[in-house]
Image (cartoon, rainbow, N blue to C red; front, side, top):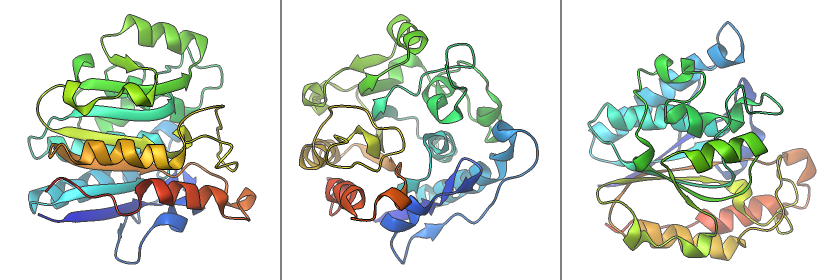
Length: 257
């Protein structure tokens, strides 16, 4: 089994230069662009190609490592796994909860909604576009989530997902049995180390601490897929601090097998 990287260089319906900064020459690159309709519908062609690519990687006996432009693209990654009868626990590492719906979101930003969508809450068009059924709350672990909107916090606390507020408290031995899908939004890293993040949140782990946490998860021998959201403004990263911090967190990660 080998680890196959795939890069999806779109931030919702526009290009993401940050993805290009941490992509590698041999990455499989998603080439689909946005389609018609509102922003929710327009990403469907991108998501369908990504889901099919992840499905092919898994069908070939390999593990996908997806570099994504936004967190909504976790939906097609999960769809690609499900097409191969893989239904992992989703470990969501993020400074934000991404658990908003149209009713709770102060901004209406779609990138703040995918974890809610994955669990069957809110607008389900992205799920329907890739033919993915909602996942049970018990298969979701949200870690950090230090910047939750008020209505979003109410949803999280009233849900059945496991909410671990501090990365230090994430013990792989306590996760549900079976396969894991690890999603890492880069803006979980302390914004003092990575000042170009699009949606910075005060505090959080250092890049080395993030690297250690990810490696502990890899060493469980249960990770079936990993994804990272490249969430910074390259125009504000002239010194490369943010790019280097994110690369430090992920470079050289080794799966258990």
